[in-house]
Length: 143
Image (cartoon, rainbow, N blue to C red; front, top):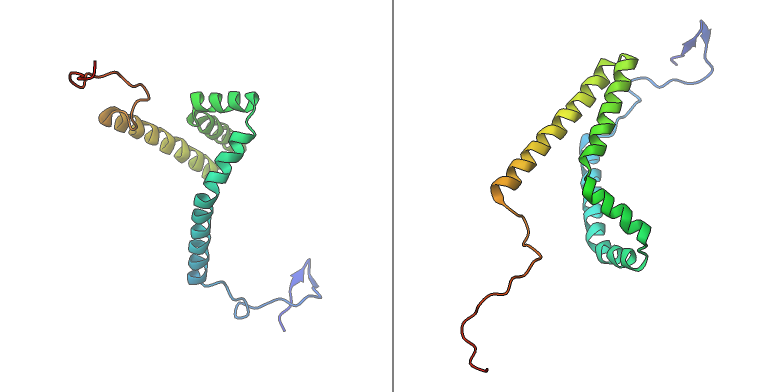
């Protein structure tokens, strides 16, 4: 029976050998992740109407003000600030791995923003304008 040593003393617990440790098979993990993703997708579709109804029934002026502010500011400033703070903390702590992670996050954020802006400029408005204009549809015979 293998034993573990801690500070030159023999431990009183049984230690598993490499042959006894059985990792989860990657196939089972992938199946579980796919099932979880499908459940999340179905829940998103089924709960969409109920969520919209709940938000409509429980809306308050403060909540509308917060939603309007989030819509105006967007989400990129918050991500940029979080990435910059994370990069600064990693720099102070001297963690090159985390500095690379946060720098990659900031670069990906910038590239996504530039790409999105270019696509919006190239394709025009993604959804129709809310404004309706009166059009002439020919002479009216019932005057």
